[in-house]
Length: 231
Image 1 (spheres, one colour):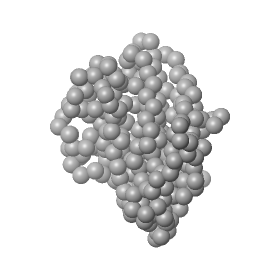
Image 2 (tube, one colour; image 1 turned 90 degrees about the vertical axis):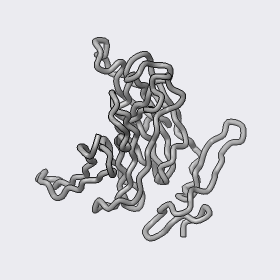
Image 3 (cartoon, rainbow, N blue to C red; image 1 turned 90 degrees about the horizontal axis):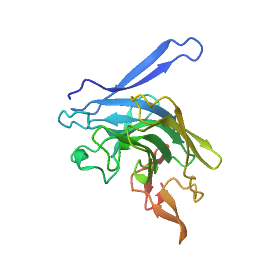
């Protein structure tokens, strides 16, 4: 791999469909692509896809989930990688794989991501459908993998009934892969304190928990988090 693939953000006219502008977003010495886009509170955009992170050539490619935050004009704000689930089969040693195919942004700037990750205990190239929850800084706070034998993929995601409804394919690319897979995913946390500078979670024993997000996280126009407060 070199720089053959780059992520792209395009703007088109709502009525005409004509191209207004396009911005290539690359990861140095890596291949990269986007599959999903969402609007964040404050006006920034969140793009999700995958990158090989400059790893040596492998078969299949050792993709990692890629989460990128940009300004509306395409200016890069931040980026982070979403690694494949662990543990995995020995065949995945050194090339854990993950891709993000859809995302849903929440009111506090956190997001829920849908995609695929290396299947636990499966052969190389086989995957499980996966849902990640990430905080406003892009750090993974929870991972939920679901799948059977074969290449299982979660392609889309919507909020539904207090949780998440995902759809995708079981054993993609195989003769048995002829049915849509609908999956009700875990309920979203109800512990949101609506502070963009905290990371909220729900503990079965302790109830709602909150900790300060990393200093420097953007929390508004010209503002950044510091010790759990937006300044």
